[in-house]
Length: 117
Image 1 (tube, rainbow, N blue to C red):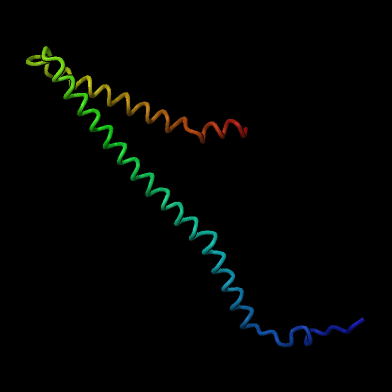
Image 2 (cartoon, rainbow, N blue to C red):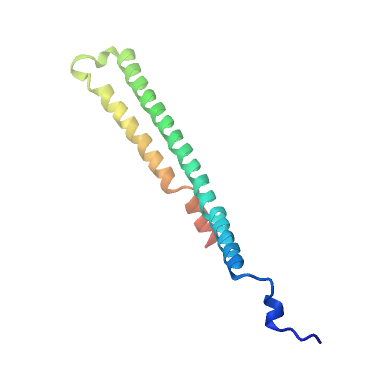
């Protein structure tokens, strides 16, 4: 059996080198496990926000189109009933908002939660 002494084991090893390697390992780990996922999450949020804005503008244009259609198609709604197309479009917008909020609240996360219980 060989006689292992600590001097032989530590010979050639440098505490400064070990600390430097440990620091480099920690920095690499932090970059891989935190910075990269945060960048990917930021990209996901940016595309989601952009998509939401585009869909929102689309809904606004559809509602304006529905208002103009009602005003053009039903000339009876001129005069004292000219407010009625606005009320109809406002109710349509409210329905879209309620359906959107309902889908957000009862999304896939809630279904996954029920399955895992």
